[in-house]
Amino acid sequence: MYIVTSSELHTVFLALGILLLFGCGSENGPPGKREMSPSKKRELLINRLSKFSALPEQVTYPPDNPYSERKAELGKLLFFDPILSGEKDVACATCHHPSSGYAEFLEISIGVNGHGFGSKRAFKQPNTIPFTKRNSQTILNTAFNGINHLNKYDPVSAPMFWDLRAKSLEAQALEPIKTLEEMRGERFNEVEILEEVVRRVRDIPAYQELFEEVYGTKNSINQLNIARAIATFERTLVTNNSRFDHYMRGDESAISLSEKEGFEQFKQSGCGNCHNGPMFSDFKEHILGVRHNAKLPFEDMGIDSTFAFRTPTLRNLRHTAPYMHNGTFLTLRRVMEFYEDISVGKNINPLLQREQLDTLVNVVEIEVKDMNPIISFLNTLNDENFDKSEPDSVPSGLAVGGLIR
Image 1 (spheres, helix red, strand yellow):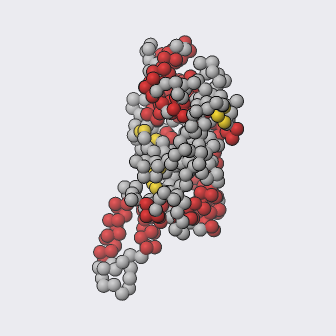
Image 2 (image 1 turned 90 degrees about the vertical axis):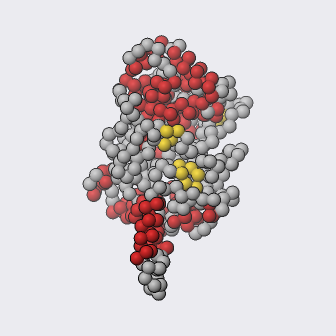
Image 3 (image 1 turned 180 degrees about the vertical axis):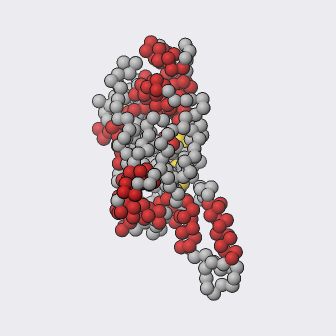
């Protein structure tokens, strides 16, 4: 089985039908029955899907969760406070730390019962907690999730996670707290942990004052307002001032000639079929056939057991290695080689047949000579201008960011 994941394909195939009706292809075929060449079909597809723009200079907030500076400050404290985890040892920032671009330099993360930071992070012993299932994606620019090349998006329905299981940053914020290996641990079930977290936060006088100031009423500490505060902080973490953004806003000198050539090669290779729009993601699911990560005791079969995962952004890749949903590729060069293997018919995942790979992936064509120019272009999407600071302390008095030092 395979799935066509881009709704825009309908328009492409309609255009193909029109061209076929009036003839475009074989010189020997009678008018009206000429076949379009595969290369022409591929060109039409690329031109239809490879649309790009700069990120917006302003963030859109949901109507029921407008921005306020104090709410963002509260959200930051909650983001760094391990009081939200079952064992009080993991914070959101443990796996999404500012020093690593709000991502993590690990294939898949160690949450509950872990200690240390980055490559030195390990499980404490004894341990019965598994690794997290997937690579820790960056929080940077998640304010723009779901955006299209016309810069239109709805923060209320923004797609989240590798498997699209949540819509909006507000819905996303509570999911790691509920997940056993990420923040919950074994002492509480999914319902109990949220009730426990709310109780703990309510018992801290500093949080009582902060929530009352932000939300305007006493007794405002609840699951929804915790999620709203964290989401508000996360929407402040944007990098919309990259060299590519300047280029798309009209500054031709913002990127070099070789980087412009890399941009063209990126599009012509078919990368832009899925990595498009200002976030370089169509935010849809695709079947690539990435190999299994041996650290997991099971095969991660993705969305609806199809091996499909959501397209990640290509912004700030300098900070977000390793790559893919399970972190199996340590470098961008290795990612390029993976797509080159697909383009010559190699199948990386033995559990998938070639015909099961995504329709859009099957038209990607990357050669060795293309790799360095494309990687050079991708560097124009990096932007160092984001909040890298940590709170000096958090209201719970626990270790800022969890047990990472």
